[in-house]
Length: 410
Ligand SMILES: Cc1ncc(COP(=O)(O)O)c(C=O)c1O
Image 1 (cartoon, rainbow, N blue to C red):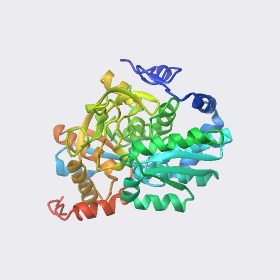
Image 2: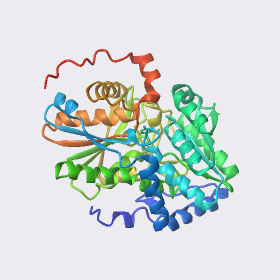
Image 3: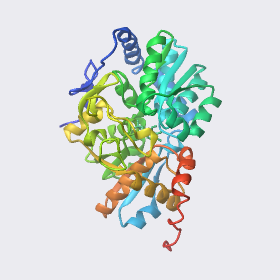
Image 4: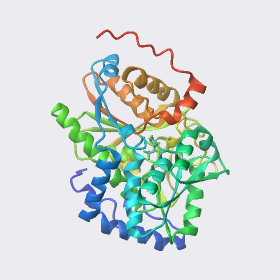
């Protein structure tokens, strides 16, 4: 497929990427989503909005984030060159702020008072609480009990930033239940609130809007790689939870001869319930108001999912990824917990960068690709920093003493 007109054609007016996407809404929410769509379509072309977002990105977020050549890690693996796009250096520690500042600006434009969202790893919650503080808005974050325990530092950050954290105690008490709960709250408060979904998920226009706000990742890395090397990378990879950092990392390269690889969480094994690899093992279906690939249980509803990385354990994925998968434009592969932990320690010990466990999936994917392509070059998106995961990693895996600073005399 020729991608030169892609952004004019997809999604269509109703939010479809081929057969995926759309907006399956309760009747009371149809008008609310139409209002969001109309507002976004109006301002996304406005130079005032674009310039204000550019100013925020530069002065508040600290963009552009660096593209960094992992020289030591690359040499340990052979002759391939691994680069990482440092979204962990984005203010608040992850890529999530890219869309939260856009959503906050939209809320201001629409005259809303409150931002509502779910969070898994807590990075989206922290980013949204940051945006709310910046714009002077109220913020309500829904989070499962399991994730609240696992990501305690992020819960504290959200509270310090002034957000109300709503604990979700039903079901598996993780990301899916948090989305259910946030939707319910939004349905009751849509007149003065806006739902700021944390990924390229949910009903139209969120998959489009969040991808547009995250486009900056790939746009910057493409220009930076060209400047550093004079050519484009052979491959770009990113981890896929809901799919926002990967969509932003890939979209700028769609029309280039660059291999695009999404790394899904394989968790403990390929058995249903042990992983959250929706594109690899799921099938077309609907949940949370949009159509995509879904991991289904025996009753046909969303299956229980698991990943060591709280931000990756969601039983579906953004609809644009489903479209890219069917087109064959992006390859989706899986990375296990064990491979992610190995990458977590290697990037920490060999490069001095402690990645989030989500991002460690992308690093593991790049390391595998590097071994298979001895003279290639790959950019992996380091979507966030690992501070939030330290307690969990130390308790379960220690300090990584086996990854010694030894065999590098170059
Ligand atoms: C650091 C980090 N990376 C990746 C993700 C996964 O989300 P997405 O696939 O939308 O980028 C999360 C989600 O919380 C995250 O916190």
